[in-house]
Length: 458
Image: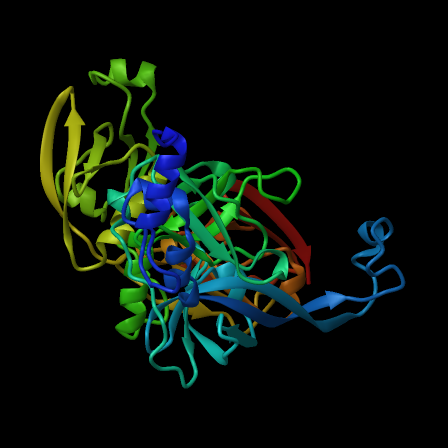
C-alpha cells in the first residue's frame, strides 16, 4: 500500500526537523513552514523591555484627568512637576551593553530601567538621542557579554521578505509577530521626516524601539510607528532602516552626543508626470531643485535650480526625505555620487559631505532698555539647521528670551525683520534700534514662513 502523499510530505518535514533544543535558524522553506521557534530562540534574548520615567511640568486642578472638563480648564491651576512613565523596547547591538531604541521612548527620561528576557535588570543612560530620526542609543551600567543582534544592509531588503517583529506591546511581556516586508522607501507628511520600511507584522504600543529581523536573525529595522485609527495594529507598521541605525551607532561609539547629518542646502519637490514631461524626463522620478543656498555643497558641485536629482550613492531618490536619508547614512566627511538631469541630459558628479558651516558667528544679548533679555545671532547655515529656519532666511534670529520679554509674544526662532518700521539686517541694526526711547514697540518677525507683527508696551 502506497503512503498518502500529504502524510508522506508531513512525515518528511518532521524527520528533517532539528532536534529539540537545537539552536538553529530555519534554512529552507520547509523548515520555516514548520516553525519559527529556532529563530526566536536565537534573536529574542537581544530584545529588551525599557521602562522610562521623565518629570514634566503640568497644571493640576479640580478637573485634572476629567475626560470632558479638562479640555476647558487645562490652563487653570498651579503648574506642578509630575512623573510621566513610558514603556517601550530596545535592541542590544553590542555585547558590552549598547542598546538602540526610539527617542520617543527614552528622550528626556530621568530614570531608565532595562529588563532582559532572562530577567536581569540594568540601569541605563542615554548617550545619544536624535528626535528627528526617532533614535536613541543607551549604555547599560555594568553590562558585559550580552546577546546582540547583527545589523543587515537594509538597502538589500526586498518587498515580500519574511520578517519578525519582537517587542513588548501594551506591557504584556516580550511578544513575537510575523509578517512580510510590505514596502520600502516609505515617506509621507503623516509619518513626519522619516524614511521607513513598511511591514504587516503586528506592531502595537510598547513595540516601539523593538526589532524587525529577517529570517537569519539580523536586524533590518527598529520598529517606530503605525498607521491606525483605533490605536492598535492594522497591519501597517514602520521601522527605521538598519543602515541609519548603523550610522547613529557609529557616531555614538565615536563619542558623539548628538547625531550629525551632512548639510544639503537644497530645497526641492517630487517630480510628477506633468513635471517630468516639461523637464524632458522619460518618466516621473527624482527631486527637482527649487532652492539652492549659496553655500550648498550641491551648488559647489555644479548643480543649479531646475536640475533634477535622480540618485545619491547609486540609490534612486524620489522624495526630499529620501535625499536626507541617503546623506545621513553616508555620513559626514564622506563623498557620494550624485546623478542628476539637466535639460533632459544626465550627468554625474561627486559630492563632499560636511556639516552645515557656521555656528561660531557673532551673537548679541541686550542688557538694557525695553528689549533687555533678548539674545540673537546672525543667520548662517548652522543656525538654519539648528532652529529649522527657511533655507532662504537671512538677517537676525532670536535665540533666547528672559524677563518681561517672555510676555511679548516673541519666541526663539523668530527672524526679526524690523523694529518700529525700520528694517533689521544685522546685529548692529538690532542694537541701535533697541535703544529707542519709547514705550510702544512693534516688531515684524518671520515665524514658520509667515510674517507676523507683534505689538507690546513696556
